[in-house]
Image 1 (cartoon, rainbow, N blue to C red):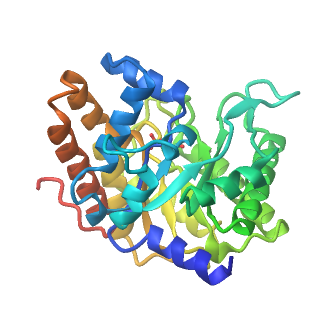
Image 2: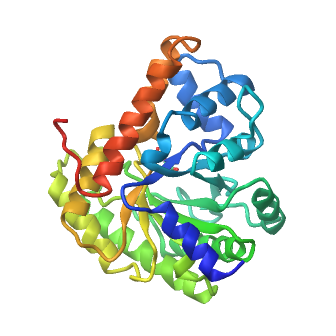
Image 3: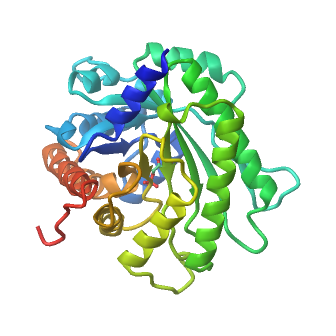
Length: 336
Ligand code: 13P
């Protein structure tokens, strides 16, 4: 795979006014989401729900690609069209979550490291054949008393870089996601410092592993006060802090940065992205790769009548995609 092809895919993922929908919840995570709205977590319900999302009419107006889970990339529409084909036919790039989740980091209580490198080359080869053109790996950095440690940050950065190099070897654009978790009573400055150290470690590791930044996408968390800090940061404060942190750590050769929503409300996730783009021009396109902030409203609607509410739920997905697509251009109008 040439770097030109990887770069082309990466640029298409962050095409102007477009972003990614993350629907890569593991079966355990989607069960939590389904439990929350009273839907039984069967394979057929998971399939029907992912079909609803991916088959939303005109979704590609604002969505460049979707991140799928292993089960999902092997599933098809009710009419038998594989999801990856449905996406490609509608101008969206199939992506795949390839990490195997977080595990306790031995010797470092309260900290986790993401696993999944063993056998990854063969899995990536298969995912490429199934139609995936980008992949995602999520590292989790928790903030608390005396954490994160430098060891935890560096262990996660090393794994992200090993994963990214394997992706590029197999023709997939790596989306590298070091998520600094919102939970905690820390202030916004602490989140800034942890995010800065994490990104510095990540880009040092990517360099050490010969990862080509031109064919890489960063999935970043925003710089926010901890959810139980009692602090309130304005939209402008969050946008300015996040931008400053990214500008001081992320090379300008990167084709784009997409954000996770991380538990923010739908509106906050959109407003923060919009504000950052209004503060531009920035060194890279800034867009979204939201999971919850794209899906929550639709899931709630669908759960009220899963046989009848499909079109209504799809209209909600489209509206969230539209709002975030406009925010990716700094053109979102809250009142509209
Ligand atoms: P949220 O936007 O719900 O945080 O999910 C995005 C994601 O893919 C997390 O890995």
